[in-house]
Image 1 (cartoon, rainbow, N blue to C red):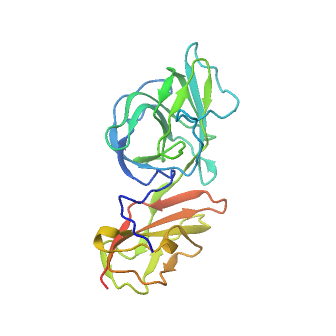
Image 2: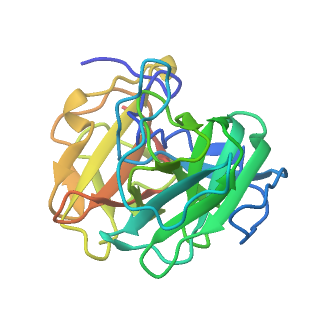
Length: 273
């Protein structure tokens, strides 16, 4: 048994993202792929499951591909693709941010915004050469997004070079709309025989259940209940939990192990004894 608190739990980022879900980011929608935007609004960020090993300088290396267009002289292009449930994510907003702070301000400085096409592909044209702090993809019409890639941190840096196209990793979007039905938010329950239940998610082949503990409340996490694979829509904790405060997170995955969704808010409950 080991203790974890909300502030000490590290969620691999990825799917960083995520988990720190609350942060400020994207500005208003802008469909011009080469027009800079500088405003920022409060939105949720979710980490993405895709991981890419960073270069020694912390930047993400470009992939390979066929250029849709050549960048203008002295400028660079950014090209990539977004999927949901292994299918093209059409018409979603993609933003390249010069500066990014997940705690305050979100996307600031010079930024470029575009949208994916019918194939889920996007092209950000004529970008000023520089190192950019983040590449984000909005999750459809929701007010949250995922980072296009992640390494040991949620956001990743992208070095855009003159007269070159940067090929970004494929982004797998996931939604934050999976619903837990038991325990109820802020419920008080006995420590034995706790049953976690949730609504079935479309196209989900299995789920991962995590029960975390607020160690400051006296609670202790059982590592067997972290990222526990479950093929049904409920899970019984067969080992009693010690009194204290806990929270539940559920994620759903399709048969290709692609993440589809997660709970929007962690469900808090208290074990009374």
